[in-house]
Length: 102
Image (tube, rainbow, N blue to C red):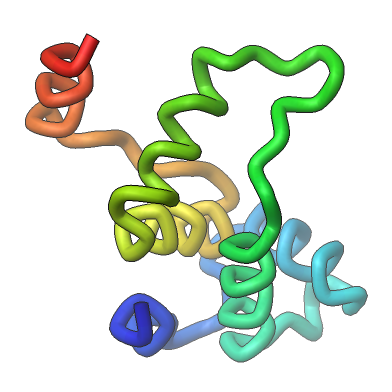
């Protein structure tokens, strides 16, 4: 997990990422640093996943599985959201593995 944190080399690369991290840290988006990204990622890793009262388990279930089975991968996805403001796309191998589990 330390490798994922060490891979964070800058503040978020998108305005959406800066806004997400700023809201989490309590700063203005223009003041967000790479250390703030690291803190936000760690905060997200320790926050229980909850779909809320109107959520859908089709997304929550697989997300929980990744956090439990491959925390480094989950942390990588969270880092992408913090940096880019959105999750990255899964590669085809991951999609096929998920389909095979069903």
